[in-house]
Image (cartoon, rainbow, N blue to C red; front, side, top):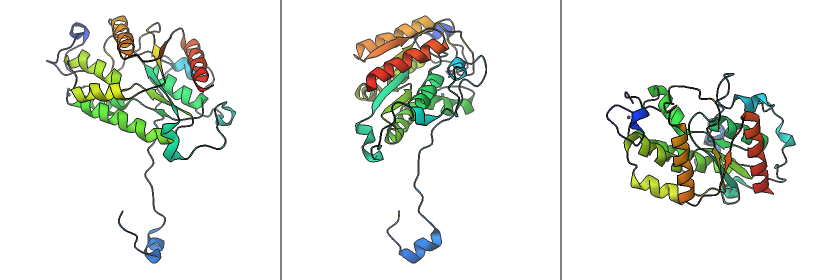
Length: 259
């Protein structure tokens, strides 16, 4: 995301300017209208590693293509719990950290590996049509959208739900871009809990796109993320190395969580 000009934050020296049912009606009527439809939230299939040099491309190249057989997953339950109770039993894993570290691709590939769903980063879908420009008024939309998507997809998760970022990371970005964050977002971020955070290190190449702009402050942003996890007393592990090593480390940590 890019901030609009005139906004301030702790990293402003490296942020470029230019970035804001009706009741039952009878069997005859129902027969005419056809079967009722129920809204089902979609799962993002955005391929963050489609380009050969995109962050995380190595995850998929390691053998995790979209057509990977899910029946081989070690986490498939038999039988699965009803959707209405799954949010109370699943484990939640948040993929967390600076930009251009492969968070989106790792969340997607972990979902394939463990035969479940993942929550895509809401901000990207919101800001892409705006060429990555983010205004302060977008922060509440991002926070509400991310939380709502997670709550909806938790009903479809199989034992574990992977989240590409969370509201805690939203507060960090708000502070960086605008020097502050709405109190209700900080409170909600504190209330929403995860069983494990995978904090991605910055030891991979930087890949630019229209929603990235801190190539010279990656370590500083990583330190902010780590400090936030520690101050909120969150359970986390640092994931580092090349793309294959990161995926293998993440799989081990998630499997230990599920065992």
